[in-house]
Length: 452
Image 1: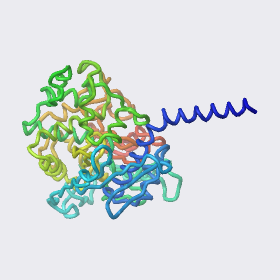
Image 2: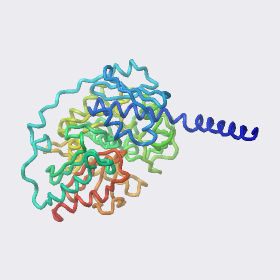
Image 3: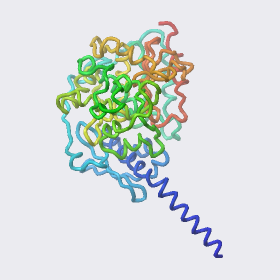
Image 4: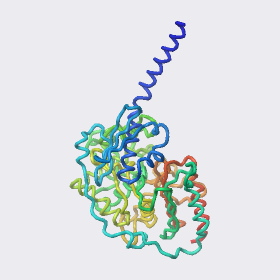
């Protein structure tokens, strides 16, 4: 009996140590993810809380968290068995942010009145507006395409397998097909996750065009001037070859999860990472480097108001992305690594901008050669990555043309641009475990004319 009790005590002691050392530091990340995801889904995406919980927050261990929405003060509090509470607050024009190491009053005081859109989308022709042409480009197998898109969405009432929220196909500048899950419409903004990195690429290109930034210069980070990090250029940051010490692991207590769910000032956290290797010697995907670029962008403006309005005035409104919002962290810097909301059509418009070398409906936005620069292979990436955009030069999608490049976000968010086929495809969802992106693209291509 004594031996049995001793074994039980040792087991319980081991369990307590395991929970304390391994599990407990990860619990605030779980509740932070839930609070932020629920807050943005409800107050930015304007969707029911139950829908957010059933879809985007349904995977383990995030599903363990309980989220409570306070509609009166636009906040969400999440906890795990009543512990490790995390609160996210909604700020008009800036989206949601977690309240961690920055005072709640300071975070809640942030707000932005966005300029009114310059036109009503339902009165303007696609791609700038939402009036769609009656005639489509010749040679499309429309029946086959519609079947492909319909089959990418789980049928109403069926078990969620494909877990797709929205798909849009644009061919030769015409929106030739789209499909949406129940409760999602062409006007529903959806989270792009790391596709936001590609928006940061565009904003950087715009500031280069403004002659406010130069990619070959050392990154303008004062804290790096007196150590080995002074050699890091903006080009290194854009291509993920900064050499900074970083761990990108979304399922552990890592640099990326601490940055997103523990620290209010993500730029400050990311620039504080030490150098691990010389710049350009290693390619490593890092959300921290994108938030450094976002902070650099912020410091290139004379005021925060100019910084906040710039994406809308110079990018979104000029491309008809009227249902797009960039979210800022608790310090007020856009979370360029992860947080932007846009409709599937808006994401398609963004793809069109890059399909046409930075020109949208005759309006030149990006500097000459910027898209070509974006598609240059990052050193040591093996043809997998460019500058805040992913590439298919490594033929990761073997049945898709090699010139394809894409925005890529967590849980299967994608914007595919295929120049050789004059094609943009958007897929948004909450998982890609049972969704074959290569097959999906190949099937769509098979419904289009073989020759341009």
